[in-house]
Length: 351
Ligand code: SF4
Ligand code: SF4
Image (tube, rainbow, N blue to C red; front, side, top):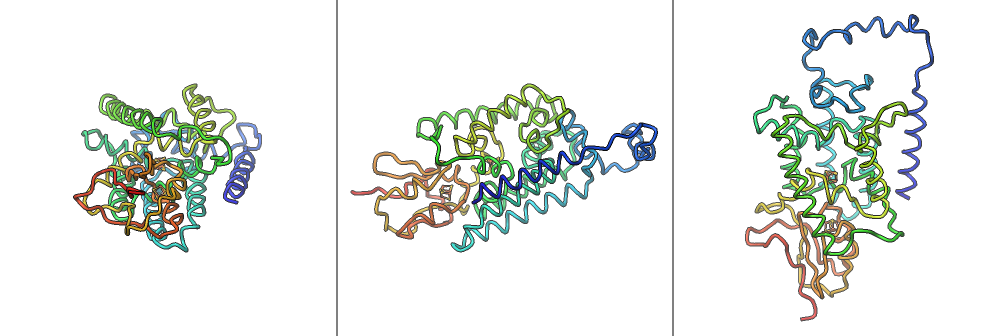
């Protein structure tokens, strides 16, 4: 059902996008171009400095040519506030069994609003990069860091609900995923390799930001290519390769981008180490070793080693599927105890 809704939304957006083609007019008849003199001024002459808030970082991004988007201070603040509000609502919803089935709906809202409507810019990954630039002393507007900074307390209180319930990048991967096909990248060894790739990439990203002082990722971001399809746009070859890899892997593997590249998912995951943070754990000793939670967790946050299940809360996206799957009502959201180990054993079964 959720795939059907996704494809319906996707194709509606596609037909909308392509119906926006300008009618052909002789250049002299196009008065909108002539009257919009503000667009012809050099940046230094612009009177409203709140516009072009992200301008120095978005060169090369398909959005940079999209004049329909209002790049104002106010719109960035509004989009950020909506992102944080939806995360807060999702954090409350996941606590209630009856609300958990609405996760797909929340993801669809995130996909349509942050992805197709806002063309995936600004987003939490650009906000993460602005935060690094801000910390390291580069000139960036504080409004750009709010999205990522705001997710930190919300993740501490509710877990990574942004990832599991709202994120448009996570949503598009999840809707493309075909659970009935053979899955790639599922065993424990691959999980370890993916983690190594992830840590290497985030280290490289931080080094690049510190050295170059600009957001290079926006120039090759494959998600922007998806959400800003322009037939006449000359995409970077790197973007096209990443786009093809992303689409193919998303069909055969659950959220491959989240598990290998996303710097936001990895940093928000570290919050689960902080005492008092929201984690998933065993609240009673009723485990019957059925492996239901293990099989329910599509992102492989619960792994099985012999007869013991382990949960890595850094990877958990707070979807609530493992809680729903446990016939013994054994799993739930808990607060991290400072004595807990980072990887918490759910149960040592059959001992
Ligand atoms: S890991 Fe990144 S892309 Fe994936 S859901 Fe989280 S923030 Fe979105
Ligand atoms: S551990 Fe549970 S709540 Fe976390 S991602 Fe896996 S199934 Fe979802």
